[in-house]
Every structure is written in C-alpha cells, then in structure tokens.
Amino acid sequence: MTTQKAGRPAGKTGQAKVLDNKELKRVLNNIAGKKENRHAKRNTAIVIMSNYLGLRSKELAALKVADVTDADIIKKVLRLVAAYTKGAKHRDVSLENTVVVKALQEYLTERRDQDGIAFNLDAPLFRSQKGSAFSPNAMVRVLGDIYKDAGFNDASSHTGRRSLITKLAYAGIDLNSIRQIAGHSSIATTQRYIDDNPHKIAEILKSV
Image (cartoon, rainbow, N blue to C red):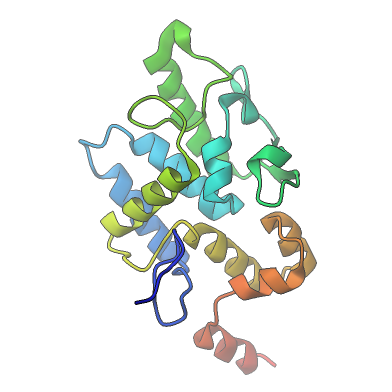
C-alpha cells in the first residue's frame, strides 16, 4: 500500500493539477455562487493569494492582518518572515496585482464589519470556523475542499503554486526570477513544478 504527502493527491505524475485561467475562474465562480457560504470572501482571498502569489499553505495559515494592511490600505509588499516560510528564509511578495488587492479589500471590509471594535491587526488573516488561525494542515484541507467542490478532484494545496510557476514559465519569464517568486532555493526545484504542456510546446514550435 502506497502513501502520499498531504496536499499532493495521487495521479499519473503525482503532481497537483495546474489550472488555466478558465478553470481558475470556474473555481472562483463556484465560491461566489454559493449563497449559503459565509466564508466566500475568505475562501476567494485564499485561492487568489495561492494562485496569483504562489503562497504555500503554511504561509497562508501564518499570515496576520497586519501583514497585508496598514489601517485601510493594502500594503504594496508582503514580508513573509522566516517563521512563516519553508526553510525559514524570509521573502518579499508584491501585493500590487489588482486582482489580489480587490480580493483582500473585499475580505477585510467584511472582517471589519463582522468584528467591529474588536477588529485587530494582530489577528490571523484567515480564521477557521472557531475563530482561530488555521494550522498548515487545516489550510491544506481548505484548499483541497475548495477545488473538489468545483469539480477538480486532482487539484490540491500545491495547485496554486504549480499553476503560477507554469504560467510564468510559458510566458517567457526567466527561471531565476520565477525561483525568487516561488521562494525556492534552487532552479532545479522550480523546474519540477512546471507542467508539461504538449499543446503549448506545439504552438511554440509553429512560430520558430
């Protein structure tokens, strides 16, 4: 009997599914379309930060409100301190993407309305139903459940990182820049995240 690491569902390659833009839109529409989902804005922000910034589950779970906002303004840079990251190495992540800013603004507006005078910059950015911070493993499950609910059973908490890295690679961004965005220590690690796409390769060869 084989075992698998949390967040990496078994498949033909053992790798989490890479979402294209249409599939990511389907996931976000599925979240927004569930009127009974009182965590819709939270879950939208989690998926956006995973797919647009490549944040790991551990990093998403560790974030505090103060990491992304000063008062009413979304910060331009998210400083992931060493305690948040894999390998205990800090990195800076830009928060200037308009999709990311919108998702965070809408979620934090809802949080302020819910918390009132109890709104606290030192509180966890993403809270569980019990109101506490997620553990890394709980965040893995949250992302997996979100994707499964949208019909992507082969997607996992690694899907956002793989999708971002693959999109950047096929957009022609150099691997060292992608490595820095992903927070990898080596380019070899970054290369393993890139999804093989025969259709994209065929298009490239047509233009040679």
